[in-house]
Amino acid sequence: MIKADVGSYPGHGTVHPQQIEVAKTLLEKARKDGAIVDFFVTHAGDDLEFIMTHRRGENDKRVHQLAWDTFKEITDKVSKPLKLYGAGQDLLAEAFSGNVKGMGPGVAELEFEERRSDPVLVFMADKTEPGAWNLPLFRIFGDPFNTAGLIIDPALHDGFTFEILDVMEDQSIKIKCPDETYDLLALIGTSSRYVISKIYRNDGMPAAAASTSRLSLIAGRYVGKDDPVCIVRAQHGLPAVGEVLEPFAFPHLVAGWMRGSHLGPLMPVSMNDVQNRVTRFDGPPRVVGAGFQVSDAKLIGPADLFGDPAYDRTRQVANEITDYMRRHGPFMPHRLGPEEMEYTTLPEVLEKLKTRFKK
Ligand code: F6R
Ligand code: MG
Ligand code: MG
Image (cartoon, rainbow, N blue to C red; front, top):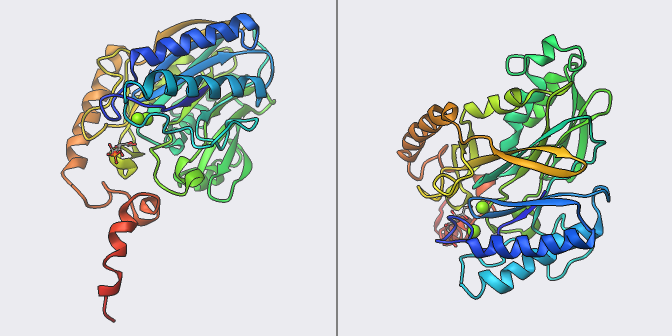
């Protein structure tokens, strides 16, 4: 999966249908040329999402270049002529240099040997940051109160290893669960800094991958939130589809929302146009889910994972939390703390008052 926000309407609401059309045309051409085997183009709010399969391994230059060039062309052919908001905003680098990591777009890659039947679920968020996945990914792969299989299926019973990225120091660590569960939680509870990037079953089987870029840390200033994606394999020795979806029934608080500066509930929504766009206070933060079967690297699907009455109540709770949080206005903890605000425009405002403080 490679994704970017290259412009949206109105403001940061949703993508334009012409952007999707151009993406489909270019990726179809790449499919015919053999760069990729299959693809699905979709969006989460104002983020364009390319779900691609290929046999070239992770960090492949041709695949990364394809995504970069496609985002560029969409920017030039659609976003700029239509004056969409934030045209090309996530393309931070001047030119492509081998890998889109660190250049603005978000990437999650998972290389695996296809099983007899391989369900793959893709989650895409808008108006939040990579740490938003920490809670649901922990619950899916580390919490027996969520995932019954951790207790009753011998294939899951040995647990999972989590790879954690420290986004401030750019270093990573592997933590093995259940043995080191408390160490894992000691890290990933600080979701602004320690983010889950990969998960493996303890026999080595790749189970999940998440995008980890922090745009503000790349650019040194606020350039929109990272709006992360993640890929989760399911069933037959991995958590069942329903165990993967279960944690999203709780709309936990995540950082992002208006101006990337507020805590709000992560609301699971349908892929349809009515729900998959942000409105209130540029939010609330949303997650869409697309479910596929992978067959000889072809994407069979998607199924709209949260387009289900079973998630209506979650959305209702998220709306209640939205009312409650909004009543705090500019006060913490609705507005984020000072470290998180460092990359926004708030320091400029505070700078003016500096000389007026007296000891
Ligand atoms: C959140 C986001 C928006 C903008 C907001 C102000 O990730 O991108 O909430 O921060 O709409 O945007 P500007 O400063 O461009 O008017
Ligand atoms: Mg936008
Ligand atoms: Mg976005």
